[in-house]
Image (tube, rainbow over all chains, first blue to last red; front, top):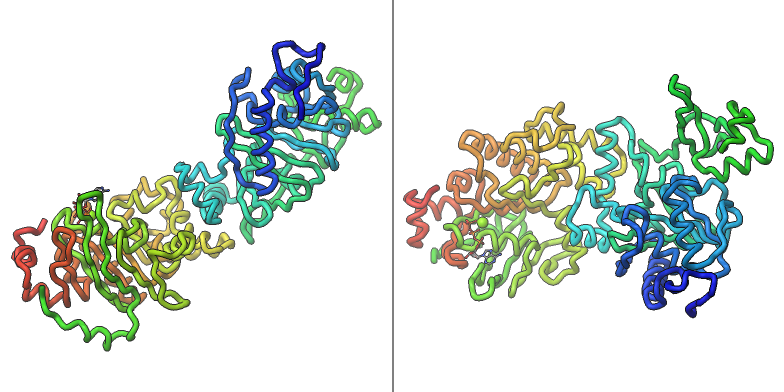
Length: 299
Length: 269
Ligand SMILES: Nc1ncnc2c1ncn2[C@@H]1O[C@H](COP(=O)(O)OP(=O)(O)OP(=O)(O)O)[C@@H](O)[C@H]1O
Ligand SMILES: [Mg+2]
Ligand SMILES: [Zn+2]
């Protein structure tokens, strides 16, 4: 790929901010990740003009994947309009001049923090996850040399110790986010802090899924149609649980919900965390229990 | 060197040693760790290793258990598929053996336990490492093993931090023995415990060794441990084995001057 110098872009930046050599280095890491699904590939993470907590890993992966024809969507906890999502979207509008969208269906590349969109992804789409801690064994084995050895030799007893501890303490597998998975029967992987409700969507997706951890300097990937299994016990099987409600705005019964406080008298409602999904449903005439016109219109 | 005839063990036990060590050497730069150590260990046999501080006991044990790579020598273990030199075997296989056929009990329970994991999780780890995926079965086995090392079952969800030193050591033993290993390495298993606690732990260890027909190699400073547990005794000095034989014979009729000192209790800690 060649460098793009477009008069409409901020002059001082290369296309998508990173220089071509850095993007090549990141693409090599991505390709290696695609070749070995679930394996954490080290890469030389660059300083980005934003703090680490803002998804610098995801931003670098996105920068390395973007082409001028892409249409970018950025979500944070399912929403397109949080500060984090807006900043990253603006960043790529300025540095790459790419089109942006809030529509999951129209986007060619989606960068996400903590969610997988509700609408099924399609072939050709890329989903880029922001990852804070890529190592699923970290919490019980802090030594990096040892966890790397465990991955190499497929010694994964420890990940079940964590699930065991969960059940011993809470009576059930209480892990609700970053729920560990096994990829193609080989690598145990942290899917980033998505709710476990989203875990089934990791498997057999027609889209390419890329994971970038900036501070930890790791990239990993799930190529399209990768088999991904959420780990569990025979007598405590994995469950993709969610709040037992329908969305109060669009009535969806099968989407991941956020609980929203509506007033200071304890009023609350459940709404889709995926704002695009919810909006599209409302526009198509689906209405939830609290979808009074002023509420539906104000978002 | 005591001219003790050890051939009797070849007849008493099965003819094939469980572990056969030949010419094992390990140096740390110019310093000798252990040198030219050879011996056979037969199934069901307990070997004690004694010697003054710095004599190479831990070095030898670490080489045998695959924690350290020896500079020279063979460590032939009788695997299910026949005798194999664990020194040259692939690391993956050696580590698999370390969590199935072998066990290692450290002097400091902190080195052998996961301090942030409950007692049940500590005992269950090896089971899960070899594929156990049924929570209730894992828990039932953990309860059983806590009982066998005399830890009340209502402590199963407590972390080792909440346990006394003796309990931590017993938990470490349970965690190691739960998968029914054939060979147990112990480095000063009773060190750091006070005397009454030591005695109880020794009784427990002796019971388990007998009951499970374990083979074991125990490094210790403590002749009481040796008398109670070891069928055979190896005495080390300056990295070399200076005397070995049946425990009673070595202790009753020590040949080497260091062993004589040891037995005369001058060197007993
Ligand atoms: N990691 C190391 N680096 C350098 N020298 C070492 C190392 N470990 C042990 N040694 C040396 O090797 C020799 C044997 O030590 P080792 O720890 O095996 O003795 P030991 O018999 O277990 O002693 P102790 O009874 O005090 O535990 C000693 O001279 C020791 O200083
Ligand atoms: Mg030692
Ligand atoms: Zn909705």
